[in-house]
Image (cartoon, rainbow, N blue to C red; front, side):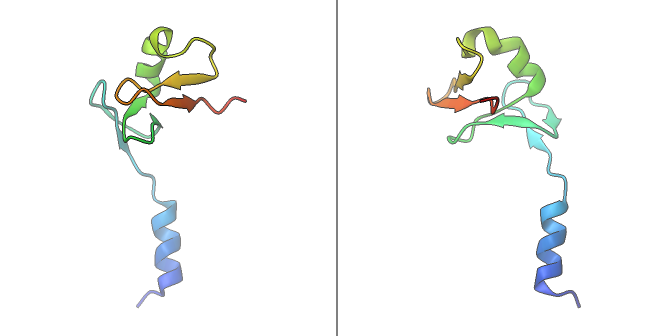
Length: 72
């Protein structure tokens, strides 16, 4: 029987795949908004021209919220 701490540690280390709302692919990394919208790196790169004006933040197409790229 496993201890609770060991089970939590194993769950934390599992790689979780995410679903891109734009292309529908399951990928390992997605840009996420607080509203639940997620976009894979390829879709973000293709649509970056309409989602950011400064390269530091991006605007969620669903809720209009501002999210950071994590580069500042």
